[in-house]
Amino acid sequence: MATQSAAVLITRPKSEGDAFAAALVARFGPRVRPVVSPLLAPRNLTPDLPDQDYAAVVFTSAQAVEAAGPYLPRLPRQAWCVGAKTARAASLAGFDARSGGGDGDALVRALAADPPKGSILYLRGVDTAFNLLERLREFGIDADEAVVYLQSPQDLGPEALDLLRQRTDVIVPLFSPRSARLFRAALPKAAQARLHIAAMSANVAEALQDLPRAHLTIALRPDAPAMLDAVETLLVQLPAP
Image (cartoon, rainbow, N blue to C red; front, top):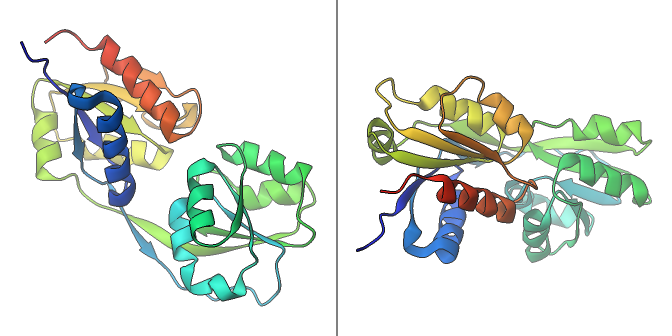
């Protein structure tokens, strides 16, 4: 008898959502049925960068690396990145990339331990959950910032809404406090699904507030592999079909 696949609702921006869906299928095969329904859509911006030479750039997302494309001739080659995925994107873009360890605090500690010989330019999105610039300055590191992209909210798609209206178990990986808040607000009034939440951090879990759920697990590290582990924890806890 075939085992029923568990629905996994992925609300990341499309490129990241598709990549996570592929990682789910590669790891769990027919045990999962990914449903990709982005709640955020990225759009790159073209600000004027500060007119000075920098020793290094800082990226806290792969989207920021992509948005930096038009500025590459003006940017230094050294790049500090929040985690391995962002560092890979920066390396592919031609930077000498170093990973800071997975989250903002770890990135600040890594920079403080081995600061570049000169000023830093932090390229970021409009909405951030961590004030990196302020933290760097606390350590005496001279830094500027430029906002190079934004993530516009969008509605859940019909397939996701239909899934949430069914009396069924749905695993929902959430990667940021903002996406958690948007998911909470996007739930249809007639939602009957039993939600099993995988949160990337305690801050993500906190952003859900009183959202009813059957299970909540927090990833051991703020990265995609740890989120896959969190999904596996939830798969084991699902009731038998």
